[in-house]
Image (cartoon, rainbow, N blue to C red; front, side, top):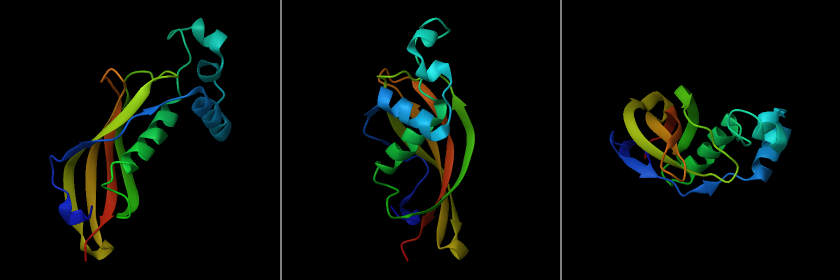
Length: 145
C-alpha cells in the first residue's frame, strides 16, 4: 500500500507461524545469546516457566517478518523509523504459534522524503489469542507519485 492509502483505525492480521526449537537454536547462534532459559531444557524445567522460553528478540524478529506478510508494506516501505513502548507481556515457548495484528494509529505526510510516516500499533498474539508482545512501529512509506 502507498502512504495515501493508510487511514487510522485500519487493522489487519498476519498469517500464523510456529516457533520451533530450530528457530531458538539458530537465533542463539546468530545473536550469541545462549542463556540456559532458552537453550537448556533441563535447566529451564527447574526454573520459573518450567520450560524453555523463546528469546524475546527472536519473537520480535518473527513479528517483523509476519508484518511483511500482511501485504500492506511490501515494495512501499522506504525505512523502518522507530519502535516505541515495546513490551514483552507473556513468554513464548517452543511450539507456540504467533501472528501479528497491526492497526494504523497515525499518518504524517513527509513530502520531502517521498512519502509519509505510518505508525502501527503492533500486537503479537499467541495461539490462545493472548498478546505476548506489543508496541508501536513507525515506518516511512512511499507515496503513489
